[in-house]
Length: 276
Image (cartoon, rainbow, N blue to C red; front, top):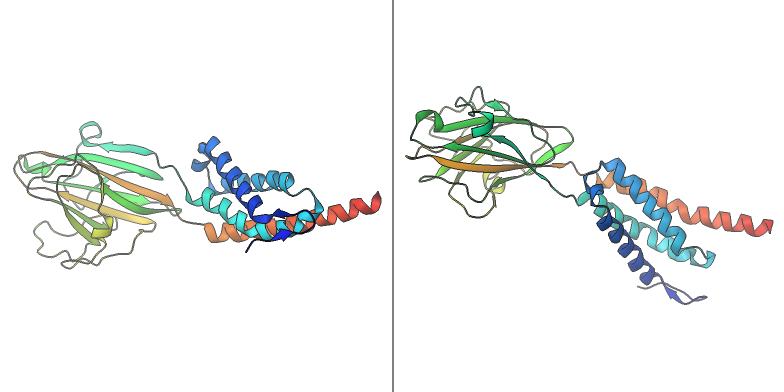
């Protein structure tokens, strides 16, 4: 339904479109905001609301539209600012540069990860025994969650590669285990020319693994990579971390703030009218 102000004959819907277009235009001109904290993005959202509110809703006759558009336009701002982010790829560990990854699941290599993409590259293969298995562990901070585990294009494998995931800072499953009991999940990967998110496949319980729900929340996780085929095979996996969504809280907070704007403007107008 389109609400129209009969006195001046304009459409609230047209103003809503103008508001959204202005929001998106501002964001495109300032892409660095996508990397800011939630607080930074909320403050910027409020500045947009204040600026556009003053530009679009000066006449007092328009306060009906202001009330109608408030929550709708607010949600547009919050959705864009809190949920859209530009992920930057960070190569955080290259085995040939940073050193051999551990070959012992009880003492895996500790790798620090951050928000966004975290690329880990190494080699496995049965040509030399130490390279058959690689183990590493990460810690997902409290404000982040693990949303994707991507096998990057160009990853090699012999007959088949193996990638296992266990909760905690160690892989306790022995290498001669006949089931995946103790693992959260696992996947057999093959050479690929394009990126593949293997996390959904790993999340499905199989051969004794417990399975899990994506995304994975804050905590320690240990990874087990193995390829016993003859030869040496390069792999690259991208561990993607994203901020824990805070949209409900942010939306309610901003909705409350924005809801007061029509009242404030109306009160200011009435007060100024009486003093003139």
